[in-house]
Length: 143
Image (cartoon, rainbow, N blue to C red):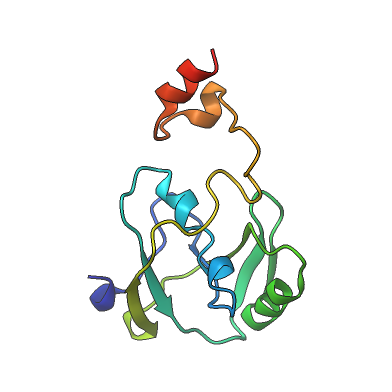
């Protein structure tokens, strides 16, 4: 279906969230495990190619994003010390002709709650754990 129709932004999203393919496989696919926490069992990688002059929103999750050229955003990711949590948002549909590959990915790549979440317990307030996998277990464990 994706190969035929492309990828369009969701009903409530501002665009297509993505990461460029970088030399570091982990950084490229860092969001996989976080996205799986919504209950999705298997995620795939959809690879596409767009012009490096195209404007994208770039920045770390939860922080302000800059509206810059894709090429400049990629250079920024490769230069910063800690690229975990970085994301790009393309505010248009990805056409089917721009898609180059669809690939099944290892399902245990990435961080779970946030970058550097190891050695930190997740927040168990009702807002943070609503709708998450194993929320009841977390509530019982921390009561």
